View 1 (cartoon, rainbow, N blue to C red):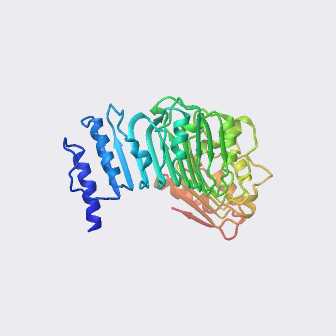
View 2: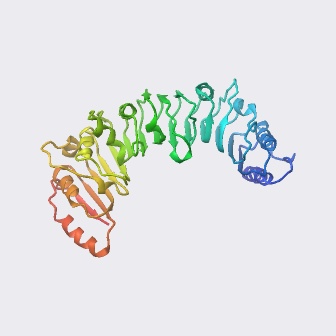
View 3: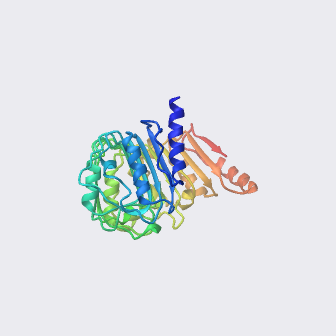
Length: 379
């Protein structure tokens, strides 16, 4: 019966989005979830305001707002920012400036997702985040504003953070970024952030996973790059696109040491190859790496120059290498097999014609392996 009431509440709200009527009076008194989806230009701002107010009066716990209309002024009631019951808020709109009231107090809010929401100034973004007392997950996508001089996210309970910006969505902002989140375990940065003026990541002592995507693909700030990698150097699992080492190659700065890193996944890099031994330099900064994965076109970009000094992770730690979309680059495979002394598994997924696969597989299987326990899987 309870599930039926929840489904009924969601269905009725979606129905009334395309209706000129107001909400019926026989709605469930306290449904935990409301979704306003697909609101377009046929809807008036005052009706959206009423729908949201209606949900808040019924002590909603999860609110998912998907609103795309021309006039977005005055659609969010002030009570949205003082809800005692709201646990999750998703706001996806057609790019507008979010007006943050003076008083913000969301004592139960644990998840906040903002998509194409711009902030008027630094104080508004600080006011919003400081009022989210128990926030655990924050996602800001295609948002922010070119009026911001600083993105300051300080939250003692924040565990997951996503900051994402698509260059096609507007001008490139260049704020300072300050993140102080001692409970953070998962972070994802992509696109826009490499254009920031500076970056300060502090107290990320328990970071488990970081995902860095196309930060340095086109243009970037060298100071930002250095501070970013230093800030996440405690990470255990790192997923990156292959452009992430470019700043250090260009400026000649040493990489920070990733003592806790055990899992590294490298994704596509369509524009240019790794600089010579760029990857080896990073492996040398990851002494405890156990798993190395190449996905997409990443392995095509690997270029290696013979060197007497082999990264320590290859000599004593690296046990698993997986290569996907392999197109016949045998030299790097030969290097790994020759130097990875404790390698237990090399998995290669071919991206070749059937007749080519057979010839390449024969060459791979006769390569000398330093590790006697290494099992080569070709699929």
